[in-house]
Length: 243
Image (cartoon, rainbow, N blue to C red; front, side):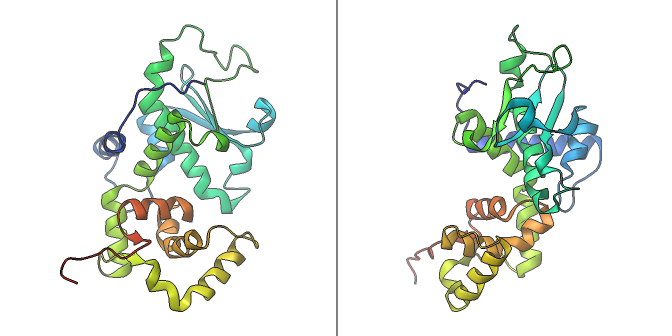
């Protein structure tokens, strides 16, 4: 796996994700509401195959989520994310599929020209150029694929409309707005997480993200990050010259 990919702005990545959605809408069916059908995008539009496999055993990594073989047009997701066996991981499963789709759209041209790229079916143990692990999240190539996945599964227009349908307006939620119910919110989040405690501000904002996360079939964390990016969740109230 290589990390020396060309720099891409977030805007450029979002435009590429929007282009893929537009292609799907043109060739298959319009996308009028979430969730984004990532499996149909992969199979019907991109003509790729995907399967669930025991990637942890295949590659010997404990934190592997997915992999992609460009020449074979194959995406694989680790069996620990199988939503039929682990319904709570459906959001991570969808994000992994979208992440690998990001590699296909953003990076395949960098790898297909390499003569030494392994072929899955010529050697069952051949490792792909891309094995995506949680520990690689800050590697540039993985960061780009994560950004693409967020923009693909949570496109600006669909999320904004879903927020307006839910809230009745486009006013953001600010952490200060949650002070009165903060203890109850954190307790509810702790129960959902089986007692696991994260950053309390993150937990509070992820609690607010859950309705849209369920709508888009992504994790509350992914939705929280996207809503912050869109300015619909704020950690501090924005100052106004007229306040």
